[in-house]
Image: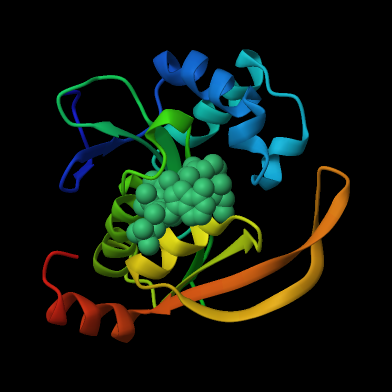
Length: 192
Ligand SMILES: CC(C)(COP(=O)(O)OP(=O)(O)OC[C@H]1O[C@@H](n2cnc3c(N)ncnc32)[C@H](O)[C@@H]1OP(=O)(O)O)[C@@H](O)C(=O)NCCC(=O)NCCS
């Protein structure tokens, strides 16, 4: 197992490394993976991914942090499975937007999405002292919506036709968890 920053039941998490560039690039070039990603509308290159990793390599100034990104993978293997991050972290509002992709479609539907969601909620609330973690997901991304609900995210609303995907507009579903809701669910279901 590689040196890790966080762990959950089946997964490790660490900062992205240069060695992740080929995996991240090929994952983000796969139309099945990038279809539901905001960043997936533009061509990816290894050079671009390397720059992205360099930007996130330095620990952020304690009060100036805006993004924390990690690569995760299954325990027992060094190969990454995907990437996740808390973005636009607001020190004032104690809030952040969570994002994820699992770069190997054959691994979808095995519960990894909800496990990462739970891991990042724990990190966001217990380590970064956030109050609210929110996300936006295309309304036709049923797999994602089910995984996020299972992890404790609550539907907050819908932005009609806010996302343009493969030639048509789809609604964006807005979901979030507040710290006290998460705390209650963790106390009631300690496996979270
Ligand atoms: C979205 C994503 C993170 C979800 O992770 P995952 O590991 O596949 O999700 P999980 O296995 O935890 O949960 C998937 C749920 O959807 C269900 N599901 C599986 N295949 C499905 C399908 N084709 N249609 C609808 N639901 C499906 C599963 O049964 C499960 O629900 P259940 O527990 O109620 O049975 C992952 O699929 C992914 O990375 N997709 C590509 C990128 C992306 O969409 N990122 C998110 C942008 S918001």
